[in-house]
Length: 281
Image (tube, rainbow, N blue to C red; front, side, top):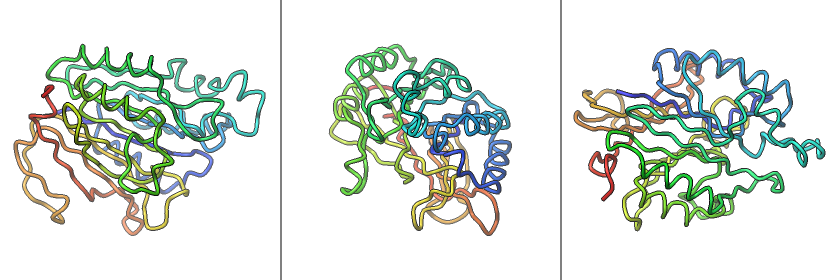
């Protein structure tokens, strides 16, 4: 089985040390094959914040696929924003702003949806949509096909629609037709899993909350996602919403930080239909 740990919106500069320690412990427990960091890694794109992020990801014990978020472009340093917006990000995570992780079980495609000219809104261009479509079309049937963006491509609440990624409709339509299974994102600090209907095949939008930052929404704890791809055999344990059944090929687990236990605990499991997850309809 392959395991993907999905983190977002760490906002280093506002991190909580106890939550950081709990997340490092979760990574040691789950032993992910890859860690996906879907943007807003820092709060103000300061060098010291990126340095702290580097120290953190080095403790996770797995390859890291990271894309920038709008907070990872300097806001107050206008000259840096206009002339070298991703220089500090690249120093830590490399110059590739749209990296790809390719293994026998997983194809994870990063997309840089930030724009230096925008304050917070994201955008996906036609050429970016085409690039992802080409990579998806070349995936093997055995791979779980995952696209990573920062701003969400779908939201469950009408009041969140201003935060949608510009170009999301064209992107989801093309990526679903090309065989995508999941689109991971962050930005709005609201975790959820949402199936998109009306496309050529079902596509799941998987959003992570803020992983370790104090910038949580009221009533929404720090959270991360653990994705499992492979044969699963598990008995019902815990509350009903966290139970799964044997034979499911893909599980999307939401893990929330529990202040009483000072640990991340699994709260919700969504099982993806393997018929839809392993090949185009």
